[in-house]
Image (cartoon, rainbow, N blue to C red; front, side):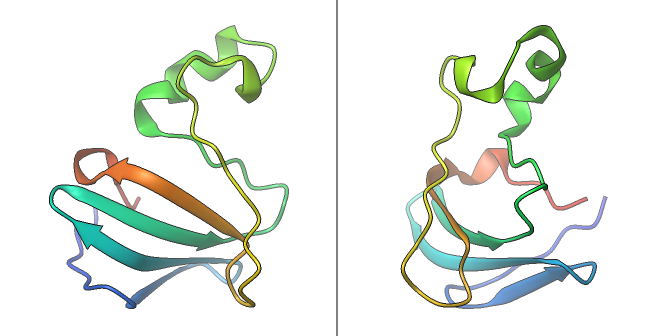
Length: 89
């Protein structure tokens, strides 16, 4: 596992198509913006094992809400993701 420390506004590139930007940190909560192709699935770690048992990600209780953002360069914004569930493979 690669472990990184990032501050607000810093970016991580994953491969050629995925960019993760730290939008803010408040207490033990990190707000991330993720730019990725639409075919890339984004799911919280604790829900990942449940995906195969459900018909769609939308039916998962507590699944993260992914919203398009108006800012250029950020395709998705993840809100209120606890720092303890953030893992970069």
